[in-house]
Image: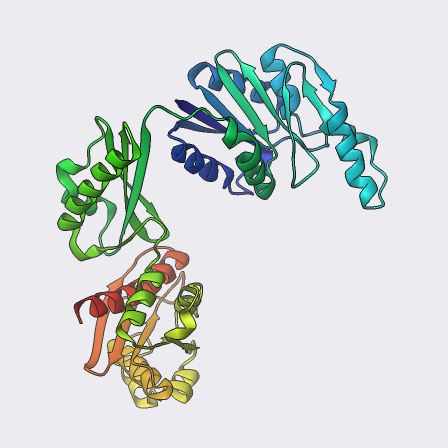
Length: 410
């Protein structure tokens, strides 16, 4: 079984809104054993939407469309579906009654424009919307089934779960996926290390993606059943882990902060942070993990030299001699943080995030990271010549990765 996902909205093609619906729907289809062969995004143009739906129905068994079911003039997906089907539109009385009741229950008068939400192509089925006013639509188009949902994510998800998933035919066989997350090597290096395992032929596909400072290896297997698919994927994952070694830190939904937290909990150790150029990013990532209060004591954002001295005990002489972005200051920040908080581990970051402030000796992207613990203080000098956002993100991840590697070895 093959599927095409279509997202509708001017806000999506303009870049003002990020399309999260497609990712959700593709994941749900995979769980049903249905392969997504394309994601298409179109604006609020009736003729373009109609042509896109028709093109999708010509190459797929399932077409999922989200967006364009509102009551305003730019919501034209239902009309476009009718055009693709070559039929007219009609009011669905039960849907109109539900919409009128929605407004009446809130003491409001329904505007005439909302009547449009009860219109469906002739011959189509209505999909009730338990989370909003706009019903969805199910219709046959050639050999394909087309399902249209509202674009509002929580309405789309509810409608898919309640109305669409139970109607989907299960694909023959199963599609099993796993993602391994790595940090510390570029995508090309990871690809070279994987070598012939980066197959694009046959029932198993291996590929890499880069996002949020991480390189992830994606393994997708098509198999007669889920058990055989998992066996195939797990075997390949073991080979990939052997080749990549400790740059692999987690899989699927794992995050660097989550893995570090797990290792701290396992060791019964605590952590504190001292941040300059990352401005609290490390603390934010760590505390985004549920249960982080069991191992994270807190952090200090010492952006200025004055706070480095007063909160962390970094000496003025050290700052004058080496500058804030230096190995001695990074070490002193980590040591001062550990001493002031009583944490088992303290990590510090100081660097030049840019875009201004760099010099020949200390260019934009230069970052010094230190980690203090009972056995001493470790240091790493890194260079991330990129945008301010990337410099800060990679610095935060690098600091946590230093701690991760230490905890895994001790």
